[in-house]
Amino acid sequence: IGVPTGFARYDEAIGGGLRRKCVYLVSARPKVGKSVFADNVALNTSREGIPTLVLDTEMSKEDHLNRLIANISGVPINEVATGKFTDDELKAEKVQAAVDELDKIPYHYISVAGKPFEGILNLIRRWVTQEVKTDDTGKTNDCLIIYDYLKLMSSASINNNVQEYQALGFQITSLHNLCVKLDIPCLSFVQLNRDGITKESTDAVSGSDRLIWLCTSFSIFKLKSPEEVAED
Image 1 (cartoon, rainbow, N blue to C red):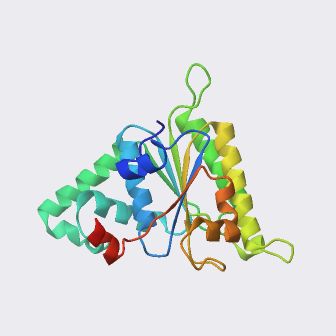
Image 2: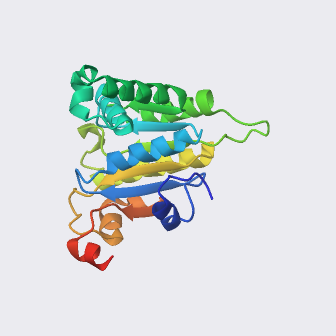
């Protein structure tokens, strides 16, 4: 049901896949790997022919593509970034194959670092209109938006009257409304490292951020403890 992420366990947890008109929220502490998870979902869906748009609020396009090519080719990222892979014919072939694959699949990436949130929403509208389009009945074709990640884009978003959780609440409200209007699914992320978040549970996040009020599903992405691994 919906767009499969390529991760069967996650699809099962959210009810079968990423459905239209829905925002799915994944939270994680810094450096756990949420961006890598986002990239792999994007690769899985675009490899199935589903147009996928990745909106990145942190990395530059060059850095992101280096990481993506390293992911696909299996060549270490430092060799991709520095060009040292060209010294090895096999690695050069793997990198070229990765570049060729990215060129063929409907994978789209936009670095939105520093852009105002309203401008990001306009990018989504334009991409859906120009790249995804609609079928003969006027229904939006299958696609996926990946937003990595919900955060304040500038200090101007906060003042004496608007707190951080209210500003983030406005973001997910606007994102949810856009998904409903365009009839598309969205997978989004948020960091668990702000004021008020001291434990990993939904009540902490809802009390601090108001982010789960309008998301369809809320998941916590974390490494298993040694006890959990032993139990498995």
